Image (tube, rainbow, N blue to C red; front, side):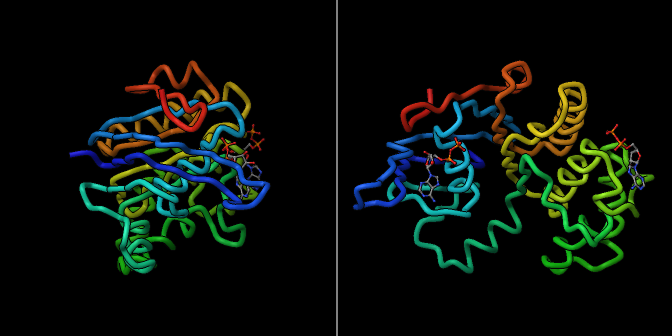
Length: 223
Ligand code: ADP
Ligand code: ADP
């Protein structure tokens, strides 16, 4: 059964106004358990819109979204928020870490929000930091970390609650090519080790080609 199943998704902005922008026009996408899919799209094609709909941050105008076989359409906002917190991890181009908290705390906090006990949350955070090779940086704040280290912490945070699905929007787009290459490699190891499914948007065709499958978004649909 698919971890993510999008069917006939339609989305426009400013609907019914002269400025209406049609972004997705009957898009279908299914991501299998453990499958890592690259999403390649020209700028403005609707990559972020697609990731937001898949991650329940935004709603489609039509079509269905199912996560692990559970249909999300018609769920209350509260139920959708619970699914988003428990089953979906996000990584963005910019880390969006909380600047006043340490790397460790940034990974602990989302677990506390899911009622994981403090000591367990800290232990998991340390394990994740170790897995991405930056355990010695646990007590550093984001500003005291390099760009690559910041993104590694952001990956750990995304995986803090052991999601089923990882959604990443240009996760290494802000890094220089050599660092991007290294950090992407770390992300892939982490994803493979946890066996999670992922949809990773990237402009980097070389990195995309290393994933299980590449889908291209153009004219509102995938090919
Ligand atoms: P991408 O991530 O591929 O660059 P987006 O999903 O951000 O593309 O946006 C797709 C299209 O929708 C773009 O033309 C963008 O300008 C437009 N768009 C995105 N968000 C809004 C919004 N809130 N209101 C109006 N237009 C939007
Ligand atoms: P990069 O070569 O990736 O640009 P930096 O030169 O920013 O990295 O940082 C090199 C190392 O120094 C990193 O491991 C980072 O954690 C550490 N570092 C950078 N800035 C600070 C700081 N203000 N306080 C403590 N450590 C820092």
